[in-house]
Amino acid sequence: MTHAFGASPGSEPPFHDVVRTTPATRGFTSDPLPDDVLHRILDGARFAPSGGNRQGWRVIVVRDRATRRRLRDLYQLAWREYIGHVAEGKVPFAPGSDRRWTEPSIDIDAARSTARPNPFADSLDDVPVMLVVVVDLTVLAVLDNGLDRQSIVGGGSIYPFCHNILLGARAEGYGGVLTTAICREEDAVRHLLAIPDPYAVAGLMALGRPVREIRRLRREPVERFTTVDRFDGPTFTV
Ligand SMILES: Cc1cc2nc3c(=O)[nH]c(=O)nc-3n(C[C@H](O)[C@H](O)[C@H](O)COP(=O)(O)O)c2cc1C
Image (cartoon, rainbow, N blue to C red; front, side, top):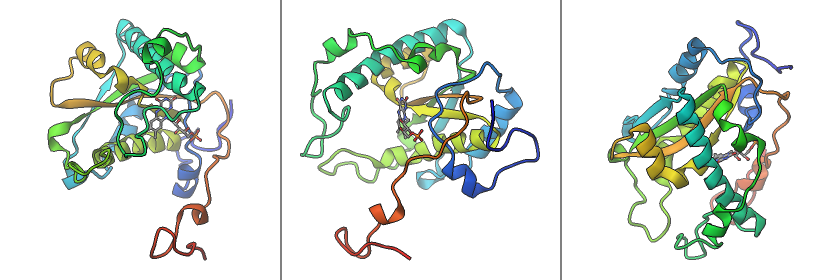
């Protein structure tokens, strides 16, 4: 097992390296991620921005074996739905050309009953750290509510926090992944974890020591997505 950085105390990597080398890590060694490290990771993540600085997040550290197994089973159902879409060349649950999602574009029941073996989904109950991140809907200022399209703004008050967890884990020599597939099973998750009414499930996160060395992430260059003055304006470059 090798790490690009962060494996020993005092070897904190520069920010520039952390943001460029924080992948979705789904394969973990059996090394534990100690509670004091997890606390430090969360202690950094809490500086994430949120609309009106309302910090509507709550984190549930899931340790109970039976609860973990149940979450794994729920995740697998959602994973089957996800892969069912991908197998038919569709973006799972993406809004249509009318900018809204109305109904599944695949046979959901068939997808849920088709096994889709996957190393991460199948061993999810064994990850070193499992977090369920929930958010208080009543404190979200969702400025695009009521527009004639799918709303996206609310997520901006919770996913920076989630990404800070991944960045923090990376800086400590660990890795992780944010998953949202589990949101398909929100009612069951809320019941299982006694999550009260105004809270929504934002995601399930897995953290641990990565099995593989971090690779270069595949991302588009700035020039690919930045223009000046107009969407169809000249490319921003230096
Ligand atoms: C909002 C969001 C939801 C995601 N949901 C899942 C998920 O349900 N399951 C999963 O395995 N990965 C999930 N991911 C991880 C993405 O697949 C990953 O960030 C992307 O493929 C880039 O991977 P890389 O950083 O390793 O290149 C999610 C990421 C984001 C930002």
